Image 1: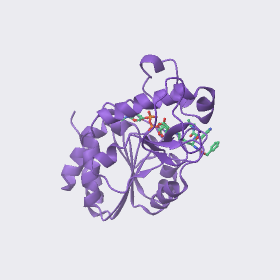
Image 2: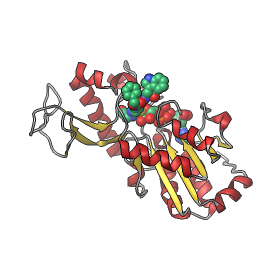
Image 3: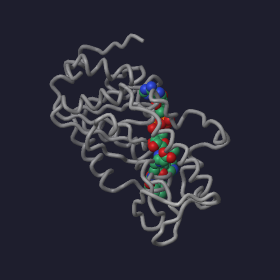
Length: 247
Ligand code: BV8
């Protein structure tokens, strides 16, 4: 695919000082991690993620929800970051004030070398006690139900934010501050429908940031963005980084 980056965008990015990049499931698609909008496969094909990624689902069927996350945890640990992740790790060194915010829970940005990643929705490779919130790294597997916390006996659960749960306060505060201060806001690989993450874009637009969308499909942001780079992030971001001299 031929990636065409407008020269006007390159000119503005070359002199930018404060850049915020916000990513969604699309940036991990080329690593082989299904996006939320992709149809679920296998035994999960009859469920929508929104039905499984909720506290209610965990109360109703804790073992099913635990197993869904265990399968996804194995999946993300078996794949590698792709050139889109790598390009963002390189661009972090290019701009003097760079913030990376992600809705993803796969940890691939960190594995690509990005530092200080703001994880709005947690991280699927971390497990915590459902009652105390303390992180647990080892547990006794159980055929019939999720493993239990050794200290209090409550179920363990993935350290992710479910629908209807509040986002981690410090992560959301840091992301909100970055969206209010940035000169350039990149929205990469997100359908821009899940709030409050999608609201960061509105903050950036309202304070006059230059907004760039990287996505092969159109989203509710597409008509409002200053620049739209319509392609897979694993192809667009490396070309952008090379043209800026960051790769
Ligand atoms: C909250 C972790 C306060 C778990 C996730 C009614 C209206 C508006 C909002 C609400 C509402 N009712 C409730 C809400 C709030 C709700 C919400 O936004 N619902 C939506 C569905 C309407 N939000 C919440 O509940 C949040 N909490 O608000 O707390 C509160 C408290 C009580 C009651 C109400 C509110 C919590 C939201 C976090 C949920 N957890 N993940 C897990 O992973 O299992 S969300 C999960 O879905 C992801 O983390 C991600 O955020 C989201 C999916 O979005 P995307 O990342 O954008 O992925 P998607 O598949 O949608 O799109 C992929 C995109 O990539 C596409 O555009 C595609 O074209 C593109 N793409 C594909 N390939 C590529 C590509 N792009 C580039 N390159 C490619 N190669």
